[in-house]
Image (tube, rainbow, N blue to C red):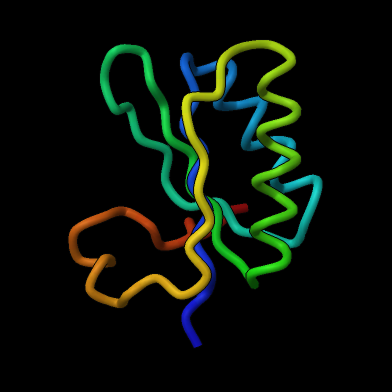
Length: 96
């Protein structure tokens, strides 16, 4: 079953790191890639079950808004498999 996809778009890297930190602390989600979009915008991608991703996105927006600007957010409950070859949405493997 395809995991839900959450995207948080921030203005600035520090704001993005705050968003990512809050997301993984708030719910059982995995971080995907982070993307420099241009104009100072940075996107953070999280994956997991729908409820966890919704919770993580809400927490990340709240935390990131305290230190900077959140430009956008979305949760896609069942993203198409056709997105994977084009967009870096798969979770990252953690190397210890």
